[in-house]
Length: 243
Image 1: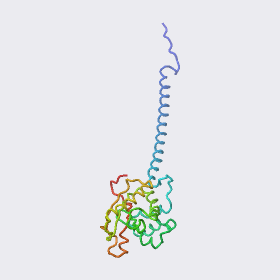
Image 2 (image 1 turned 180 degrees about the vertical axis):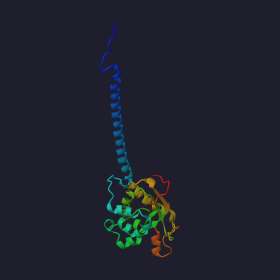
Image 3 (image 1 turned 30 degrees about the vertical axis):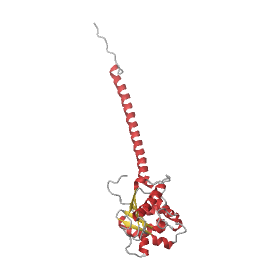
Image 4 (image 1 turned 135 degrees about the horizontal axis):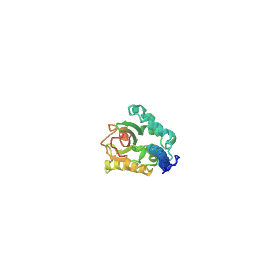
């Protein structure tokens, strides 16, 4: 009996797996391309978000984002603590330019009653009570508010912690508690800054009475300088500081 001839040709069922395998490879390639594109988008988004977060300290309370030139120059000046002593007068001029000062304050009065000093933790803005308060009172005078207006933008564009401390001289009239008065004045300055929408957790206050005189002596000039509020901007933050 004659044998049956096998059918010739390469399109048999044994080759069907190649079609399925080809489709699978195509799907896998599409899947990995999709994963790669999604990964690239995530990195781009993260880069944008990181840039935004890193610039939060440079955004003002209204979200305008651009730092005024004079504030940027102050921030540049305090970046190098080792040369800070040489820049204090420059920082003072930048923080309190003549065109934004209250007209009732003369240049000489400002020079005698306002100082910018260097501290291990940053810079200290010192304002006597003659600039900020009516004599013997703890409520800010209109001229004092205008001076704090000059400081507020600097605090708005930085995340540095701030300590506000009140001080009196050694000749407080009887019947007035020097610690209560200096504390009330520090609190008045703090309340003003909080009204400018600055974050409360950045601030601390202190009341020292006459315990920490800036100038020794009993002369009227020394006593005037000792009746003051100090605003310490801690540009050198300690390790472990809360954000």
